[in-house]
Amino acid sequence: MINENCYKLGAEPSVIRSLFAYGLQQAALVGPDKVYDYSLGNPSIPAPAAVNASIMDIISSMDSIQVHGYTMAAGLTDARKAVAEDLERRFGLPVKAEELFFTCGAAPALISVIKALAVGEDSEIMLLAPFFPEYVPFVEQNGAKVVIVPPDTSSFQIALDKLEALLSPRTQAVIVNSPNNPSGVVYSRESLEALAALLERKGAEYGHPIYIIADEPYRELVYDGVEVPFIPCIYKNTVVCYSYSKSLSLPGERIGYVYVPGFARDSRELYTAISGAARIMGHVCPPSLMQLVIGRCAAERPDLAAYDENRRLLYGSLTAMGYECVKPQGAFYLLVKAPGGDSMAFSEKAKLQQNLLLVPADGFGCPGYLRLSYCVAKDMIERSLPAFKALLD
Ligand code: PLP
Image: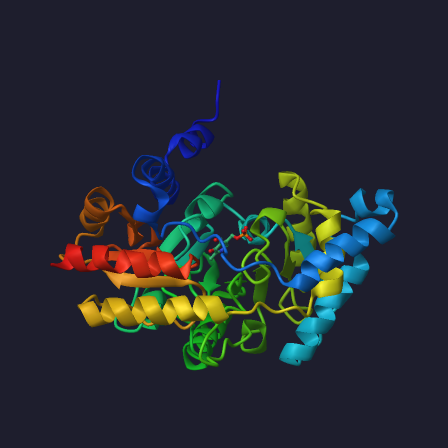
């Protein structure tokens, strides 16, 4: 017998992956320069030179057993110290190595935190639409229920009234992703402060904390000097899930962390439960080489010039043609309103008529919109513009 849930998830084709596969197939038929693939969020800028230099230096100068051996489940203390110092320096709050737990990226970080907070069949985790679609299986397959807060399509900030109406004594946490995938919006300080005040008040009323799970793989990917408030500085019951997949262009190396601030309610117990959840999943001791690299490169930041150029080009060109787009302030996604209103139909038409691969945002809790990942070559954007125009015409 085979687990039905696992089978269903494995068999279900992901819309993004299907579009990507279609793109590869079409590229072989019509040539790669005639396929415009905006499907995947795979970084297109190289990892900082310091990262590659560290890898080379670590491999050539350190003992191989140490470089490739197991580490403690939570990760190397020196590497966690380096991350703690970087966070402390940037955000002005006390961070200790013991509050950090290294993970294989943001996905297992999120799952460990969700699992640690799923206390019964009724536990609810709130998702703010639009949201990263993988949150749904992360929550549903780890003992909790998903509650979706519909989007505020006027600003794509947090829809606080809708959220308040959906809060209940069963609410354990709210996942907050900013800069946001798929909208590219950065939640403002004002929006986050209002959310913090509401959760504080409701937590007191229900007699238990409502945690914010801050999913932050795009924390440093921000343009025009927009502020990305660090949520633990605004709301103490926050757990941060971070990844170097996007910020250091290392998605295949699988490295990130969970940060449970010492001042969060039941901080030590929660940290211990997170490490237990990681143990259940076998997600302990992420790649040792990458931990060593992060120990040396915790303060490295990406050069965003190429993404910013793409962002300006795509946003400027599409809005000039008449497309309605949410102005992205961060990450590398652009959310576009589907002309005609049916995102599935528009995506299919774009694919079949123009080899233009746009992801319908229905799975992101935002039907009627399309997500474009602009972590691509600039000349692909330039070549794709007539296809966008032809679809509108
Ligand atoms: N959270 C968001 C919002 C993402 O967009 C992604 C990946 O695209 C993840 C989490 C997972 O990231 P990782 O590669 O670190 O597991």
